[in-house]
Amino acid sequence: MERIRAEASLSPWQRLAADPPETFWRSLKYFGGYRLLVSLVFLGSLHFFGVSLELGYENRAVFRWLCIIYLLLAIVFLLVLRFWQRGFNLQLTVQVLTDIILLTLLMQYSGGYKSGFAFMMLVVLAGAGLVGQGRLSLFFAAMASFAVLFEQTRRALILDADPADFMHSGIVGIGFFATAITARLLAKRVVANETLARQRGQELAEQLSVNEHVIRDMQDGVLVVDAVGQVRQLNPQAAQLLGLAAGQLPKTTALADLSTGLAAGFVRWSQQAKEAVEVLQLPVAGRMRDLRVRFLPAGEAGRTLIYLEDMGRIQEQAQQLKLAALGRLTANMAHEIRNPLAAISHAAELLVDEPRSAIRERLVRIIGDNSQRLNRLVSEVLELGRRDWAQPELLDLQGFMDAFVEEYALHDPRITEALVLEIDDGAKLWFDRMHLNRVLNNLLGNALRHGSTRSGGVRLQVSCVVGPAASRRTEVHVIDDGPGIDTAIQAHVFEPFYTTHSSGTGLGLYIARELCEANDARLELCANPQGVSGAHFCLTGRGE
Image (cartoon, rainbow, N blue to C red; front, side, top):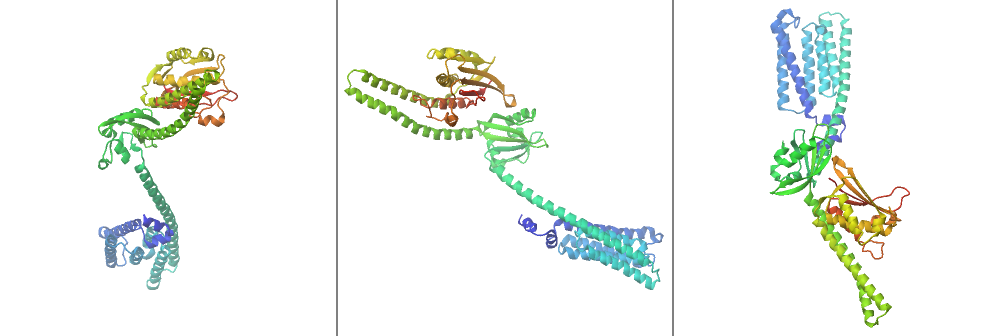
């Protein structure tokens, strides 16, 4: 990694000159293989075709020895590349100059540039330019042009060749330079692409390293499963949740081998192949544990992300929050109890000296009212402890609401005139019967206190809705036509001991929401449409 960063700080040409990567040496080996093949072709042609070819016709013995030397040098170059990868520029220069010299000599004994050996130099120049990434390309082209012109000069002086052949040799030299320049431009583009690829590779490697650390240290378990149910990757937390030791993390295994329950959930999810969440009971370390499992498609490769979340850990965190809230509740309750106790104590002291009179009756009433307030406060605090005793059952809301309203009318007859009940046919709700009775008592009591007593002053609406993943939810709306809840205090209505009523304890809505959460339901304060007043509470829970 440090080497890659150091190379990234250099220009492409500086980096290639400083320390050519392995790809350079591999290309030079291919170039050496080409040289070996060419020399074998020359020797084979002489052996099988003999004098029928014009190769080396001016001196076949020397031509044969030159081919043998070319073959031996090709083998030597390959051996050097095999055992000594040092001095890339030096090795490339020696090999290319050897090609130019030997091809020029072979051309000399085969009739000059007309033999076609000049075109073999074009291949050498193009290969050298690409193998060396454009370096020394023009130098090689100049050396090849000089060699061809030198050979043509020797032929003109010694063999009295036609001077017009210099024109052809010059054209060949122009071809050498054109080939070298083209190879240099192509090599420059290859260098730029390789530099970009290396940078992208470095960024990808760093990103993969970050992702690996994030996934490894996540509190939730993560599994990557392919389309046939094979686990391709899982983090240590997932292994722990599935009861595997750290040393037992498999590279690739079937999901069913890790957990039959999780595999069954994966099969069910595969039928719809969209994000879904469910809670599964899986055996971990010899006991059943509730795990919240989330299935999520992971791209077009047919792979799936499975997130595992320990419900026990969530419940422990929630319990810690509840204990912290209970501490604040206890402090607030002590403050709330102090006031009525002071009033009772003061009224009792005055009663000692007062004869039977209107003042005495007033003091007795103060004692009674505050005693009732203390009793109500203690009773509502005790209700907080009952949230963990929830025993949900599937309630038929039509019959439950009728019985509830009838019972409520015994101590508050206003409900028979003010309440309008609207219930969807067959509406049902999973809820503890006593808890729902307590929640509705609080909501309807507030609605009757703030709403009017005319018909429709309080509305109780029950409706069934279809939630995510085709789950059925039931909503219970309690709406009144009173002045509503001021915007400034809406955020505080569910806080303990927050009340706007002189004789209220401020625990009613807080306890109602706690009981709803204990039954896997939610209690919310809803906004009214524009121009509509009154308070609107909605209880949402699991339907049939």
